[in-house]
Length: 508
Image 1 (cartoon, rainbow, N blue to C red):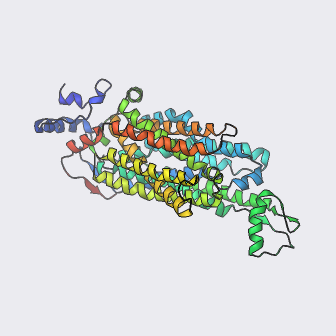
Image 2: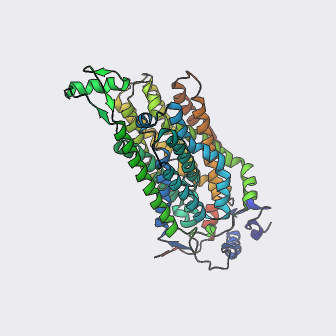
Image 3: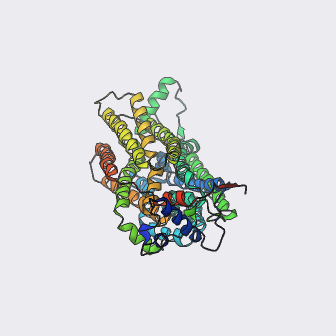
């Protein structure tokens, strides 16, 4: 097989595309035969890195952040939802489940849009779904009408999350050079996690519990303590019933819905004003090279064993972790941890994960081709911290606040920092399959694992301790799989070979 044939992107020899030859003469031949194929439409072979890439990443990140915050709207204000709409636990759980449900139902449709139509149409559709979903929630607070509208809105918002969560590697591949791709993917993921963290803060701030205190109650320290313990059980304090100002809570909730809708429309406008699918000139050689046709790429992906090693490791561990975090307050309440403390655990854990993901991704970009060992180190360390956390819950080790906070936050930042590495490794090992197809399938498995985890919770009287053991199992099962994984950097190898001159930073 000649070098030229090995670099052609078609269904016959796609898996050999980008193979690195060992001899220097072969390297030179690869460069000479690759460059004519870099541009699809007769453009110059110049590789340029545009400064506007950071604006593109920010616009995408804002949409991703908004979609995640909208998805988690009602979990932090669940008590107000019970007061205003009369929801029960099953209804609240369903609101959360619409995200992974839509992912399972529509992943391949959005993957096709991303592959055939490009990044701009896919993101425009996603941003529209987020705006439309938030708009439906603003129509009314009448229980009989509002509840189905809110569920429909959450379902539609979930459709926007497919690209909002899984499209980050496509943005990095189209707009960023090889030395920044993992960092760009991590930044997009940090935006997504930031949306989750903000929802835990903004929701309770804008929609607080409005408690009505009886006129004959003296508000001193003792009374406040008693009220906090007793009111949640709807008993009496000073011979008077403590009630909630439901009309005020309803007004607060609607104001929150209006704010969310307005911000979502603003994000949609950003995409409408300026958000091209790709720059005029590519940031790397592989950015302009043709990917496999959608059906061919999907078939190749489904039989790629190396990809499935990554996919199952990421899907099981990260899918369980994400849903475990979503029910953290319910889980920890059985172990004497307050809802307030559980909320702050989640918030600090997410913020720490955002920072850690950026740091790890940047180091991974600098020390290329070492991602496997980064992942193994993150999983071993994170799994150890989560083990101590779980043992603290059952009092095997001291269950102090310091132990719980430190182990949870460190474990969460270590494991969440692995996500951009998984995304980029999946792109590398499956190249020249399109990044959108690869990562949407990767995140689809993540959603399936999360749904299975949530479905087990529906078993009556199953308790919550199983969730913690399931989390540890999902983490540690993946470690030997990572040791078996053989690294392959098909895309990066081509970028290294083909680039003959430094990238030009362009002001635009």
